[in-house]
Every structure is written in C-alpha cells, then in structure tokens.
Image (cartoon, rainbow, N blue to C red):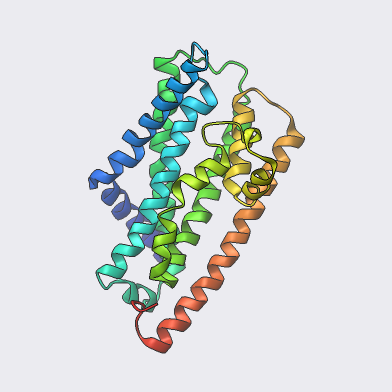
Length: 263
C-alpha cells in the first residue's frame, strides 16, 4: 500500500508539473503578474519618496502575490476541468479518495508557485543588490514552510468546495484580491483598520506571512514568531477538518444522485 501511495504521488505530481509547465496561463500567473504587481509597488514607493524599493513589500510581496494567484486559479480550474470533462464522478468513485488526489494536485501547484518567490529573491539580489545581512534565516525558512502549508490547506479546501458545488466557482474567482488585501501581501497589515485586521486573523496566510516578513527584517523575537506560527498551523488544521467534512458530503451526494453536475 505504501509503495502504491508513493507511486501515485510521484505520478500525479509529474503529470501536474507537466500540465503547469505546458500551460501558457502559468507563465502569466507565476511570472508576468507578480512582476507587474512588484513594478506598480515600486512606482508607488518611488512616488512616496523612497529611492529604493522595499524588500519585503515591493520585491518579496510580488512573489507571494504570484504564489497566491497561481494557487487560486490552478487548484480551482483543475476541478472545474474535471467537472467539464466528466471526470469528477469517476474520480470520486475511484478507490483513491478525492481528498488525496486534490491534496497531491494542490501540493504540486503550491510548489510551482515557489518559482515566483525564487524570481523575487533573485531580483532582490541581482537587480537591487540586497545582501540579506542580518536576516533571521531560520525564521524565514520555518515561516516559508508554514506559509506553504497554509496555502496548501486553503487550496485543498477551495478545490473540494468546488467539487461540492459548481456554483461556488463564481465565489472562488473573486478571492484573489480580497485575500491579498486582507493579508497584507504588499504592505504592513497594521495599516488596515482594526476591524479588518480582526477579519484577516481568520486567514492562516496572514500569520505565516507576518512571521516571514519580520524574519526578513531581522527579527529574532522567538515569542512573536512562535505565536504567529502556531496561529497559522492551527487555522490550517481547521480548514483541513472542514475539507474532510465537505468530502463526506460529496461522497454522500454522488451516492444518492449518481452525478455531481447538478449541485
């Protein structure tokens, strides 16, 4: 069983990486769009009187934006494509659970998004000459892993949400900018009104991203970082539990109706 699972994971990730590589949309999501957002942020920063772009919110923020945009559209479009091609019922009815398939797909999409972040770091070093001296390396690394985990949990949740109801696609398509706005991808979260900060507190990405930003700025405050890491991981597990409940609804529905296209 373990060999089968590892073989499934390897094969699914290989196919998913190939799909992402051959799809022109991936170029726009992971390269062009983050570059545009970073450029706009740099222009606004220059207009505000800053001679050099802000490392965290102009350069790295654009890479995070690319990761999030890629996750939202790739993970949701995958399930939409399955429904359109008549594959969703077959996947749900197969011995391998929909949750596992979506977990592998979403993990691949999240890892693909790292390309945006890697480009952002390369731009920071090669173009803008940042040396990252004094950066809390381990804080950045741990925060990045937790950020990836948080994005994975949200991606699996959204994919299963679309499997549960095709009407949810109209809602998911509008999540890209609100989450980026609430989580402060390209500006400090403290500039938001207090009531919006409370709302953003329900999104695990916000906590992981704040910890990563503080680590990039050289913070070694372990208490601050640990609180943010625990919040991000805890909220991610809440989403995983909700996903499992939704998966049960999907299976119950398909057993009763024999199809998912009418939900």
